Image (cartoon, rainbow, N blue to C red):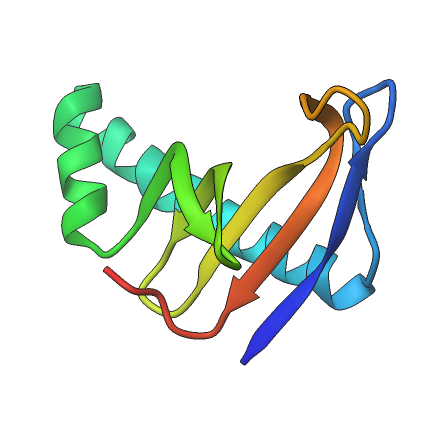
Length: 113
């Protein structure tokens, strides 16, 4: 499975997506990652150990440069045992600088660890 589309952020910081399924998957994937991490934080009360346990459980969130569709993009990637979600920014046509209130999203059905 692969879904692709666009997102935008309003003045209050709320995200909207080009398709309802993208919004639902985004919410489910990011919520699950944060739930797993928070459970380990509550249990261990140590950020580094909670991060390590979250990784061991198959969940990760990475913000870094990544090759997407043949281009290097600055992306936030959520990895779960089942899904990989990438979000990255549009570039301004004139300046080629990132536009931080809109971009692209791609969700694939199997995370690559």
